[in-house]
Length: 180
Image (tube, rainbow, N blue to C red; front, side, top):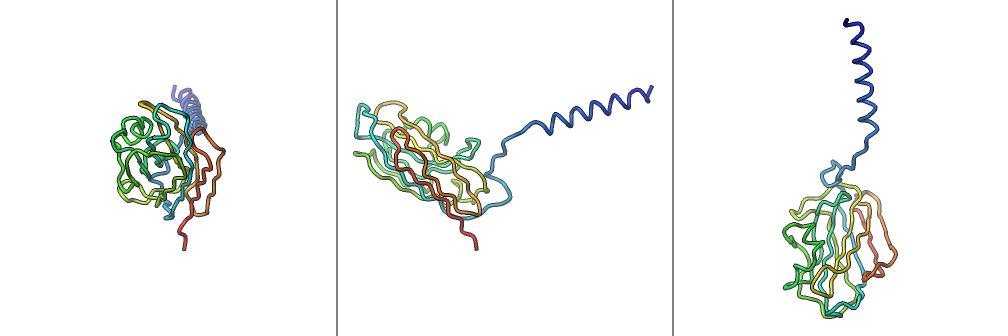
């Protein structure tokens, strides 16, 4: 009886092994072992979409991991109107703006710049991998325009100049590692 079970058991184990190795999973890079320090320069020009309060608008720029985990807010210009930055609030779950550039509602569109130091909201250097710069603005009492741009945080410089998106033009994203 055992001689008949051993080949069947081997077939089950082999099948499970094939299934497990054929499945892929996305690993969140935040806590990976390799954590290169450096800085990310983010530049973008905001543009109107002719919302109700245009050219006045609120704006948020933040970093997420490739799997959508909130890392850090870089800029929030929306003191009394933060509730309309729905994508940012959904990402942070608490409106976290620790170490971010903050300020009141913007009265005009133009060039915006901020720097990310490669750390999370607690000041810890995050792991190397693919991340997203997320940008959101609204000119009315509700969700406005949202865009995200990927880049690689690692041991080499990564320069991105993505195509213009609605309300975000001239975007430049440059990761510069601090490798000795």
